[in-house]
Length: 394
Image 1 (spheres, rainbow, N blue to C red):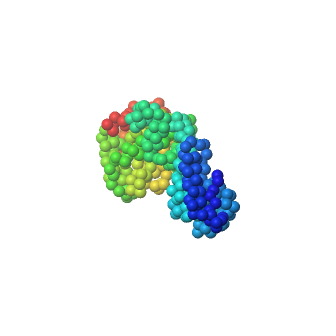
Image 2 (image 1 turned 90 degrees about the horizontal axis):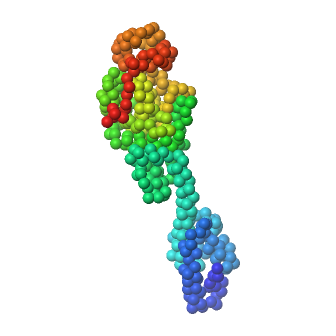
Image 3 (image 1 turned 90 degrees about the vertical axis):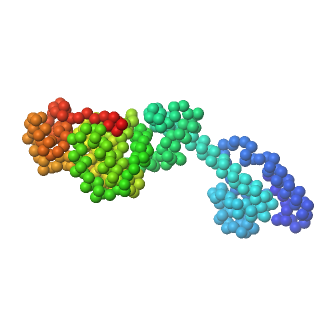
């Protein structure tokens, strides 16, 4: 690029010469349109144009900095493309170089546009792979949260990002994968992260519509005996009352049927400082497992802070707080003073009388005895109540 030789190098250049030279530079820059005419695979910062200017005039960066009233460090960062070229600097460059501030601003705008386009191009490939390989799109379409036929691949990517309420894949990773999550799973099965994330997000969206009072620990602890009494009620009764009691104490209880691959039966997440969410999937369809999962999740709300997401997939975790939640649910349903009698219960009639005495459903007693080896897993299952949470909610 040939730069005009004006007063910076020669005191004999006339104003007419300078005018013609500047016209030539402007015409050249406009006609070549180096930064916008094509779609290059690289981005050229305005600093490259500054570098050419310096080389052509034999000027150092320090000298240019003095003329611009900037620090040498800032000029060096401009040349290297490490800092954006601001409108203020563009105005100063117009005075020093003869190229209009508009031209310098355009170079910066074109550079940023190209950088964004190239980043989006690279991101698109990663996003497309993420949507295809990790997100259960078909399941989300069936549930009506994604349209069946997107206009194109980019549209589907935008729809999935909108569903999760994030602008970037990195944010999704941080919120749904990289957060400190304790996911208790059976050792025989592994959950798919995208399915788990989708299930949690469905719960968040549903919980947003549940009106709750401000959470109070004392309030929900005081409500535990009432919640325990509901174990003897039919599903259509206990779920409505459970939901209302919890909402009155700052906890949104929602049911979201399991997504294939999630392998989750329950989850706990704080939606704000004043509102928690307890999710149930209904994966295990007996009342003993349902109530154990529910009170397990309540323990996370009451005792384990507001910074983590807890997701349950089955028994057997060695994580201390998961074990604490297990003990909480176990002892709330059957207090230790009463549980000492379990080994002595020899008939189902005795189990029924014991359940009536302590005020819980007999199926819960059967489940506890089976897990602790006091009863064979093939015995007593007729006392457990089958529950379809999806129907109970409807």
